[in-house]
Image 1 (cartoon, rainbow, N blue to C red):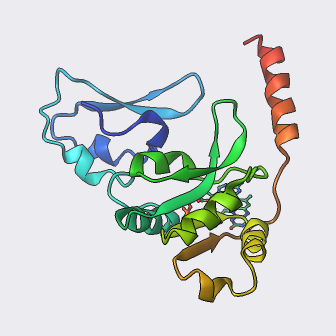
Image 2 (tube, rainbow, N blue to C red):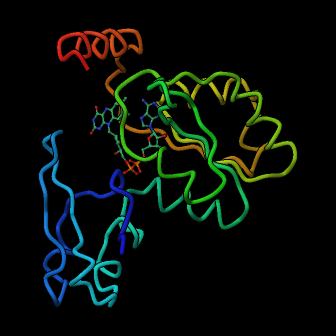
Amino acid sequence: MKIIEKAMCSGCRTCVYVCPVKAISVETYRDGFEHIVIDDKLCIQCEKCKSVCPMLNGNGGLFGILAKEIIKNEGVIYGAAFNGNLKLKTTKAETEEELYPLFKSKYLLCDIDDKFREIKKKLEHGKQVLYCSSPCQIAGLKLYLGKNVEKEYPNLFLIDFVCHGVGSQSLFDQSIEYTEKKKGD
Ligand SMILES: Cc1cc2nc3c(=O)[nH]c(=O)nc-3n(C[C@H](O)[C@H](O)[C@H](O)COP(=O)(O)OP(=O)(O)OC[C@H]3O[C@@H](n4cnc5c(N)ncnc54)[C@H](O)[C@@H]3O)c2cc1C
């Protein structure tokens, strides 16, 4: 049985302690992080682990709670997610699965691509849109949409966060290249 995708596990260990047959243990991987491992031979499929997993039971941050409500209303979420090449891009999510890569802080400037244009179109089609980003990008979207943004787009929901500034994608790329060369991997 699997409780949750490895990348989504917060490592809180509640599942380890709640399991009545001690089928769940913790392993430290090469990356130094701990992940839970389930022994399928011992597991009795009671799913107590799932019932106490904070990541599965909506006890995450405010962003996740609001985003799930918008998805229930068939709305669209925009937030920051890494693509396959580790470039941070403003990314659309229309299902809970698509939402997961948007969670958590990434300390880089997020590339908005042409997403402001896409957001405007969605709003004009009457979709609910939730956009979470740094204060400068939220302010940028409001200015892009025009002076009467609150009146014109009651279906737009904006969240910004406390932000002291962002790192550059280029420095991040250089740091990956340096690490790959150093490790030969
Ligand atoms: C660049 C940056 C600077 C921050 N500076 C501070 C600080 O000075 N003090 C402080 O207390 N906290 C700071 N934070 C933390 C921030 O307040 C937390 O992200 C927030 O509290 C998490 O709330 P949550 O659990 O609801 O969000 P989560 O569920 O973790 O979702 C995070 C949301 O933030 C968006 N996001 C993540 N990274 C970026 C990014 N690089 N650009 C645009 N959007 C992004 C995601 O799309 C998602 O919508 C900073 C975060 C970032 C990304």
